[in-house]
Image 1: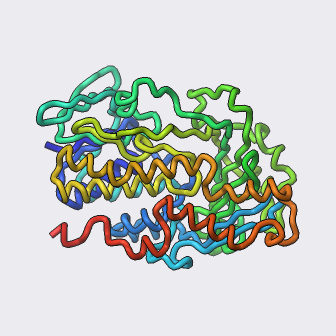
Image 2: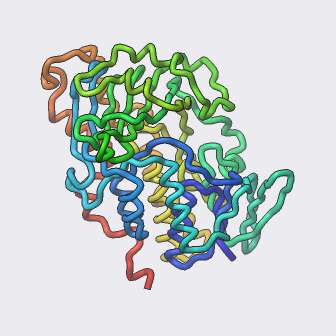
Image 3: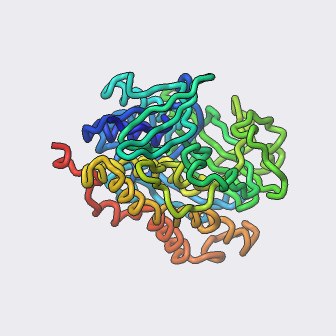
Length: 420
């Protein structure tokens, strides 16, 4: 029997590629009738890039992504707080990539179909329930007005933050938790800033902008696709509507708050005005839970550990999840013991990331500076020491699993000799 995967996003597709690599039959059931390149920019950290390279996907990443060179925090006036190198420039054995989420998903899908055949992904089938049997797991699917059940060796819930698999495990959990922040996301064709491959965050907890290119600059025009996220915090007692998730938005809803954000290295309002379409998202997560696994069924990716988009590790962790599941199948067999071993390796770590991203993430340094000086300073050393900045950056890398020396020294998740 095959492993049944609910969800054809980055998590589910990477798991499919991993299972094909290790010779485990699988089938992915995706709710969308037709997969399309939706979403905007994401970052893949070196820990995830390593896993994709081990899947033979380096040429794909080089084609659809851009290697991120630096990562920096700035005050609301654009003054530099902390900037550090990223990827190979920082000493990792692997780069960091900034990439359009939809392009990555489509590239993973194309690779999977080329390797495993088109029948491995079944579109238009939404997972709605599961059940455990004596020697199998059953996944119930909805397709139009038809309900059907399929049996497999195991079921993996990769169906995102609104996971039906998780909802059955935790029927009283309710909607995701909103912290009062609203995000407006878009992409603009514009001149790259700083190094041309920089990721920058400016502002503080109540108002910020996140920016990075997701394409190389055009050789003729010098322009690139710049991904940006504008964030404002409102009263969390104000309800947000689930149906407005990914809602097309009007610039008038947030642009006035950024009109004066003109830095010597970027004109923020001009960048926002250059957008074609902009979408609104609430910043939400879920509380960590005590278990992901129920018999022959487990969770991965955002279904298991949805977190605020802080620190650029949501997609990266989903990729790592997939590879660890594959490694545990090789160690224990395709069975419930492997699922428990995967959970024991990953769940404690992601619990720490969820909690850190609620206030102790790498972006916390911007609010510290805002609190100490209102974001206005001549020399950052007068506000915060370099030792404090360095320690803060190192602490989060350790929590998130991509500290340079530890990652470079760690063995591959799946050794090549295991595949022979």
